Image: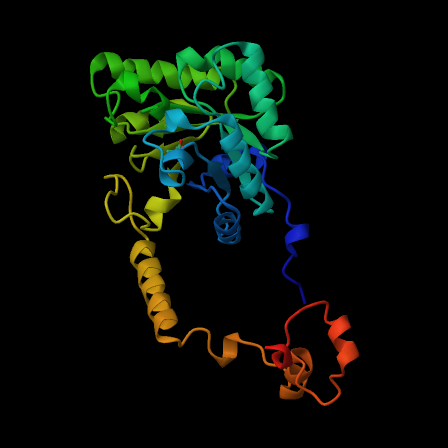
Length: 308
Ligand code: KIV
């Protein structure tokens, strides 16, 4: 009888595994992950690529944009996600200005995410403007995922979270960006907030997978921010996201029930507590007949019931 492989026996996916999924025509389901317990669950669920997105800044750290996220923060979260996974390819986002300033710094920082963070690849934003950077990193042996369309690190330049590539010029630029990222050696690229027909046309013209977010169903795969998927926020859900559960209300209901139980004194109950013999308690508290004066020395000044 064949046995399910243990987690140790499951080989971690690589960019070659992703290329195989793409070649087999299997759509690729990618999710963001930021912490150890969630990464474990997503890995168990068979998600092949976990992106430690710099969206961590907004959805986990409470920043107003991804621009504020540091390399140290990305490293911290990448390590946690890597520790929580045995199978998924972990892709670490390169934060704002950790790449594209000088080739040396870009390579050094990508190396940190791989060497110290344990990531299997890095992701960076930008099309033609980032092609040289992608090439430098890929040539050093580090797999790169590109990211074009809406690039949140350029939000101050783009002026908001708007769909990209809707005009003749911007649409053509997007196509040129996709080809440049592919040419530079990226193994895949995210297309964010792109009209679905344009995303499908770009996908058809590439020989590496596109991973869409707000880019329609014609991409080679999809990525979602895990907190959107899980319904963690009561206030805002982007148009492109679908809640697969409502964790916000599930967690809130659980916390309210816990609070009520603590106030009522019904938590913890017998099942959540440990008891010792009454006789042992008497010994501890110095209530037994054997509790002689010399024991006072041994109790090292701890006040016992007979002293009170
Ligand atoms: O940081 C992130 O979560 C991302 C995804 C939106 C692709 O880059």
